[in-house]
Length: 79
Image (cartoon, rainbow, N blue to C red):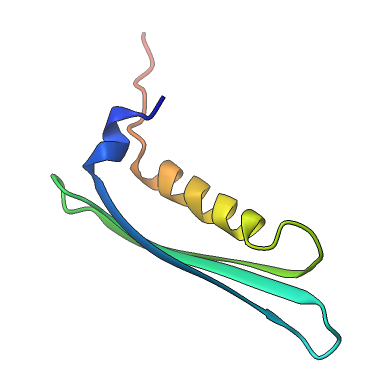
């Protein structure tokens, strides 16, 4: 189930990858998000260097979590 606050975000992103001179994989993911109501914005990038599995997967997860942490409303503690 998608959180309601997600629906208030405009998000754009781009992914890519390269191999270094030794054939090791480097992948990256960059994203920009803006809250439609508050105007709060973030640009964030994730880079994973020298891995062999799940090309793109890890960088995307890092950036996604960064966006969630930045925009997710904090819960106020009772007390």
